[in-house]
Image (cartoon, rainbow over all chains, first blue to last red; front, side):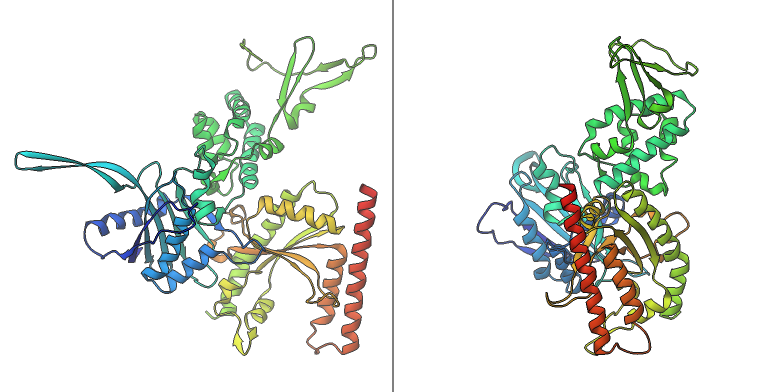
Length: 341
Length: 200
């Protein structure tokens, strides 16, 4: 991957302003320390931008997306005025919560098969202190507009394709605030600015995870694996709405290596274990849940939903309405006291 | 390699196996939906692709880069009983697949009858590009058509009769084709009414 051109724009938070502030843009020279720093950002972007995204069609369903159109315009004529359209769009979708930002549009290309590349990179503004020592004196100054590749608020999107006419519908984004509790911040970069969505829908990604857990549970002979899967099935409700991957799901719940291996084994192709999706609890429950029946004598019967009826035979008691006899047979593999049911 | 050879290679190595996996993927995701008559997916064969790639608009080639621009190299179809089912299936499709286009295809004016159907261009899910298949051998998108049984039946017969190499249809033949479309349209409307009445 080599850089062809770098453009930069200062964007203000102007989502709710009637009159948009004027944006200044510039061409960054292809040498010097700033160039070197941005070249590192560019080279790391393939690894760093790990959320597959896809542009959304226009509201009437046509195969048209304004941001994609701006990107294609910029790729065709790589100039400050063409990049300005993306900067204006960013400014018009930025709220005070996200604040001032420095936008870099890094255009590049790759070796054959020759792909055109665009990295959209937003550095948020922060406050800082500059300290400089001159012979025996130290000057310390407060600086208001420092742009940092802040680990918590950095945002980027990488697009690569061989065809300008029909390509550039998909890309990969990085958004450190995608799981932020504030909806504005969580949806600002991918949905509001890029007019995109995750390439994998919530239900498709969640189903993949639930099926992997179900398969792992079905095939497991190790009681530890079954116990851990049963526990995460209950705890998963806390992930509702969060963007995750199957691997991150396993890490999040600190599952043992053997359970992780069991969950990842049915995921085909393997790379899907690292595919990002937004967790959908109702979809998860549709494909993997535990059924629990509590009786008025204090007994609690639990098994995975799909195997519950095989685990427990249910017979109605003739002379007592609503009463049932449950029977089951198996080897005891674990027995313990629990504080709560 | 010329375009035909390149497409033929892509057809064998990528499109054909992926279409089969995609069909199963669609069936799995639509599983449990009522009144779905059939779900199928196919790879566009080389002759049809070449014929589409050679299309012209105003004397100019329609596609400058057909391997990247033709989006129905893999086409899938879901056939439902009634018009309301098309909507139900569409909603479910949009829950599992990312779309870049959706449109309801209808004749140009209200006094014409011809092809009716709902068409999507959807992102090919990563699940179907299994190990052993090169991503460069498959397109990024596929076309999905959702139609009622009557819409499907009409379009199949129309395709068989209307696109023969013997030449264009005569005026009366075109009227007959339009007449059958009108009848299929009417049958769908009446079944939709009956379905709604019986379910309310």
